[in-house]
Image 1 (cartoon, helix red, strand yellow):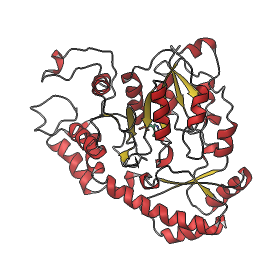
Image 2: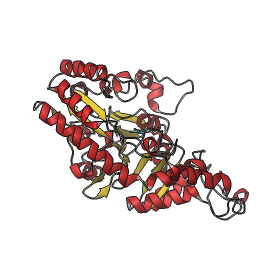
Image 3: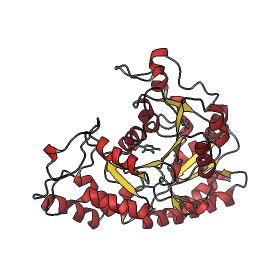
Image 4: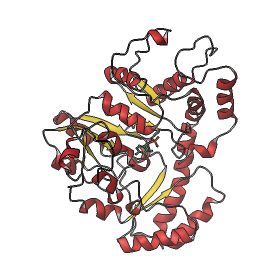
Length: 392
Ligand SMILES: *Cc1c(COP(=O)(O)O)cnc(C)c1O
C-alpha cells in the first residue's frame, strides 16, 4: 500500500539536491536552480512509465481532480456520475466545480456498474468519474463504450490505483483524463501531491495553466507571461517533486512486492473458508496489489470478523461504517455544509444528493472487508495464519 514504508537514501539525495543546488519553486528562476527541475523530471517519468502523452503534477490528488474537471469543461449545472464508494475528494471536486454529483450503484468490482450508470444518465450528464477503488480497475471497456455512445467524458480517478493496468494499458490513461494521488498513504508518495495524465493536448494545456493562476508558461520571464484563463494555485513544490522522482523509480518494485504479499494472504483466506467471495477483478494481472478485498456471507458475519481482526491486531477497513469513503456518512454533502453559496443548482433547490436507491451498494458494502497490503511485514506467515484462524 504505502510508499512511505520505503523511504531511503534515494529520497534523501533527491530532496537534498533541491536544497543544495536547486530552487524550491517549480517554474523559472533558471539562474538560481542550476538545472535542477524536479517537477518536470517527475512529469517526464510519469508520462514515460504510464505511456501517456502528457502528465502534469499538482499539490494533491484532490487538486488533480479539480484540475481535471475544469480542464474538460465541467461546470455549473453539469451532472457527473460517480460511485457512492470512493474518497470524499471525488465528490468535492465535482461540487466545487459547480457541478452535480449523481450517484450510481457499484457492483462486486467495488466500482461503478455499467447498467447502473445507464439508469441515471440525463440530458445534463457530461461526464463519468470512474474511481478505480482499492488498487484495481472498474469495468473500463463497457464504461468507455457507454461514455462514447452518450458523448460523455470519462475521468479515471486512479488515485488509489497507480501502477495498475487493464489489458496492458495503465489505469488513468484509458479515459479522457486520469488522476493520481501521492499523499502520504498512497502507493507512492510525495508527502502531498497528485498528477493528471491525458493524451488530449487541449486538456493538458488547460490543466497546467489552471494549476498556476492561468500562467501560460511560455518564456523565461514569469512576470511577463499572459494569463489566458482563470486559475488557481495547485502547484507542486520542488521538494515534494524530489520525493516523487525517487519514489516513481521504485513503483514497479513496490507493485510486485505488494502483489507477492497479497497473494500469500489471499491464498490463506481462500483455504480457510470457501464461502468467501473475492472482489471482482476485470484483469487480475492489472491489480496493483494495494488491498485484499473480500465479501462475507452476511453483514453480521462481516461485523464479527472485523471485530476479531481488530482484536488480533490485523489492520482492516470496514468501509461501510467509515466517515470518509462511503455515502452513508456523507451528511455534509446532503446538508450542503458550506458557508458560501456555491453555484451548483442543487444549492438553490436544497435538493438531496443521494436520491438514488442505494440498496444494491449497501448490500455489497456491508459485507466487504478490506485488508491493506504492506510492503514490509515482521512475519507475513503469522498474519496469514491469524487470518485463516479468524475466517475458518
Ligand atoms: C486519496 C484519494 C484522493 C485524493 O487525493 P489527495 O492527494 O489525498 O488529495 C482522491 N480520490 C481517491 C479515490 C483517493 O483515494
